[in-house]
Length: 244
Image (cartoon, rainbow, N blue to C red; front, side, top):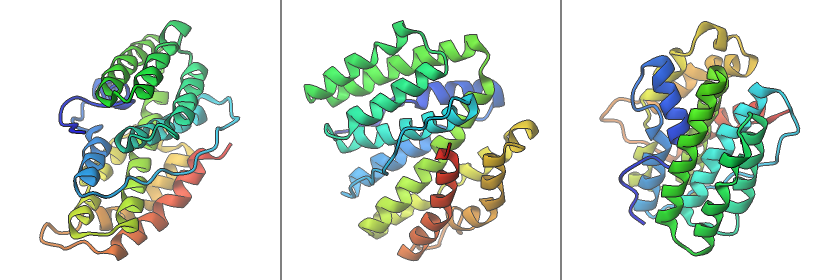
């Protein structure tokens, strides 16, 4: 599957809102480009275990939404018909908790149908359409903070999945994908009010160590040790975001 144009599931919604409220560009591309890079390097994309949250707090639901959406993207790139329905189900539940109307939510059925037919390009297109509509609804509801917290989770999950995938089948080509200069810039651009969130504070505290890995000098050759170190940092952080 050649995915070179457009943004997949959850990227449009979060990326569009991110541009609207922070005026930074290209924030949502990291996971899309990296997952495509992993496929090109013939590295299976790692799919994390994920249990649904029982929390009803909007900010917690937003974190879980961002992580589930990123994991759904991993399913799409892996063309995983077995795992994807479960993650799509989580996206549905979290989107509903965030106030999405049923007219928008039911469009996820079309994505599932396209997956069952093995039409992955259609899955991408329908996912884009769905997330555009979710973006509109979130903007109408004024849920800026929830959208940005979902993007925080999205980015962290993208780092984690990339590092796990690279570590599981290490190669010099895939190791290059550990580089991500924009992650720290994005985190530092979050508003002061969002940086007081305890989960965001935990990520901010880990930023220096993360930055040391993902912003190595341009002539640096990444190693498997770099992947393992990034995993050791991201793993406890994502657990903090997922916990009720």
